[in-house]
Image: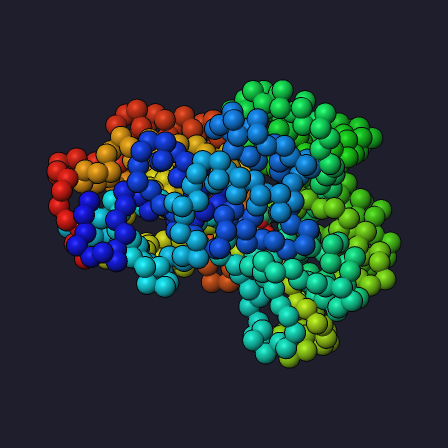
Amino acid sequence: MSDQNEDVQVLDVVIVGAGAAGIRQLVRLRERGIDARILEAGHGAGGTWYWNRYPGCRLDVESYTYQYFFSEELLDGWDWSEEFAGQPELERYFNHVVDRFGLRNRIDFGTRVRSMRWDEEGRVWTTTSDDGRVYRSRFVVTAVGILSAPQFPNVPGLEEFSGEWYHTGLWPEAPVDLTGKRVAVVGTGSSGIQVVPVAAETAAHLTVLQRSPNWCTPLNNRPMSAERMREIRARYDEIDDIVNRRSASGFMHLGPSEGSILDLGPGARREFLEELYNESGMTMLYKNFPDVTKDLEANRVVNDYLASKIRERVNDPETAERLIPKDHGFAMKRPPMETGFYEAFNRDNVELVSLLEQPMVRFTPTGIQTTEREIDVDVIIIATGFDAVTGSFLRMDVTGVDGVALGDVWDAGPSTYLGVGVPGFPNLFIAGGPQSTRGNIPRFIEVQADWIAEAISSLDPSAETRIEATAEAAKAWSDHVAAATGKPIFLETTSWLLGTNVPGKAAAVLVGSDALADYRDLLTATALDDYRGFEIDRARQPGIAVSS
Ligand code: NA7
């Protein structure tokens, strides 16, 4: 491509986002000699692990299953220091990958994408940043993350608060010192549950404002000894096979594929669940009997067990009761992993406020007002999550064929073909977005990034190829995603997985639930069948100047 306007950067591919998906996408495209560049709003690489630098932030997926698997050299050259790495280590890891593959000069940091417009005449995307930089590219790949558009409490007054406030997903790079301060944490999802025990150690007083309690299980993290790391490294082929092929969701924990927890007697049930509770990570979910996420009676067995653990660990019975979920069963929302969360409430300086009993009314100049009291604090930590999966797309102004806005097309929920293409938005691919699959996120991101790189290189970005998912294919895929996920037990609650955590957002199945191996096979089969479900036009020849 060429362009007369020197201020416009002309590329084969613009990738939006330098998180796990964007970095992987850039590696794969560069390997194929494709002129690609990442535009990243942050001032560093790592995506989630750049933005979420709040105290206590860490993986709840085993470090060695979360990393990239595409390069043996990368696997051999990185030692994890903990079973579940903390944010600083993950940020270091993604920067290590960027440098190892010489990508740093291919990333424009501090570049937030404001708009992306498809020009049908020129068959080109024009991407504009907030600070007015313009990029033109034959293809765009969005790698904007599914948990990256922060959501704030829907009460007024935050701008009037005279103390410090931080959203966990927008945590500043400069250290935040909570020592001796009165701190409030709003929200008890995975982020709030991680921050609470750490903040409790230094804050003079910590008020935890909880709306819905969650079913948490212990992370049981531990340092990674050199010997354990050697042992893991020696097993990478086996681990690769488990997380990338055998496990439906990309985890090490393989549970019984059939049978019922209800077949065990009461003593055996407790023994079985106790074993899972004492293991690490997501064992309670993934190593459990399949019926605990499908059958309400089986689900109740787990709920009763977990409630008994909360009562065991929290000294004050009233606080314990407030921490026990009554509105949903285990795994109906993504269950958080905790490290000393429940014990934090046994400290004298920690107090739990139930927003179900006294809803939040507003922020005030000195803190937070509920229907019953004023809570004066020096620091407010907002851990109210994200406008998940689609929020990160829709905060960019993306327009496709005939100037149609993605926000309008996805008004009632996202519709994609295989989670990678959207009808009406030619030459736009998605790495890490709606309707792909779920679980250990980098596992399906690597599948998508490989597929997208292959598609773009086979379509020749220097020619004026046009590829667009058909409306029929996207409809069939969206129906499939909804049907595959439509287990009643899962749909009974509000959750970011359904968009129901955001007031006014249409409820929809935002993420798919195909097994990772099936999803990969489907993408591969589609490519082998000349990108079945996409309309491809290879008719035009290269060389036409990109119109402005
Ligand atoms: P989550 O899991 O969406 O949790 C958000 C928390 O904030 C949750 O406890 C919410 O309560 C609470 N919340 C949301 N809005 C409000 C308002 N308006 N007032 C009070 N409390 C509110 O986000 P996280 O950041 O913790 O975790 C997101 C994912 O990141 C997680 O699943 C992992 O995959 C990593 P609610 O349950 O809605 O009543």
